[in-house]
Image (tube, rainbow, N blue to C red; front, side):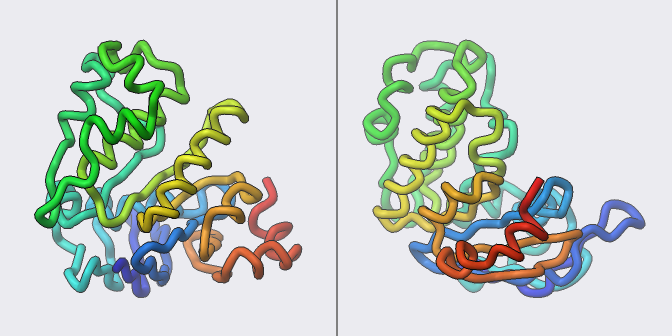
Length: 232
């Protein structure tokens, strides 16, 4: 599905990504993890057309992503839940969801009723403005908005940042349900123990380079990787 090969990117003269390579296959959950400022969000921005890559390749279902505008990448089937949620604050919950509604590939698996069934708290507040929601509700709305694009791949940048433990658990449970339904997901987050229960594979990034890849069993057993690259 998603193949990233030797991806490089820069901000002006400063190179920040160096030969990033990883895959996300159909129905697979993969994490990008590492300390803050190591290049995880820049990697996502490069894949979504928000940062221009300077080298390497990235393809989705065999189609090169390089050179495409962000809307074309979304139309190809990649849904993004950005860091900070970035919902429309002066639109209602329902208007936020309708704004991104799209039928992909001859079907619309995700519709308003289904999103409301998946996130009952959004159904209860469908007439509220985005800026009237709690942080957890805003994150649910951001996920629901991305699902309304009916993506083949869902990307979440800082999936549970700033949320209370109880709300984080709700988000993890939602992502686990999506995985069980076969949704491919790429996640950036720092809560490793929760990620170990959800993800199939992990990509550890340090200073713009991939320094370790492996499955949850291998990461759980490798104390050196967790201490060296993942401890805050």
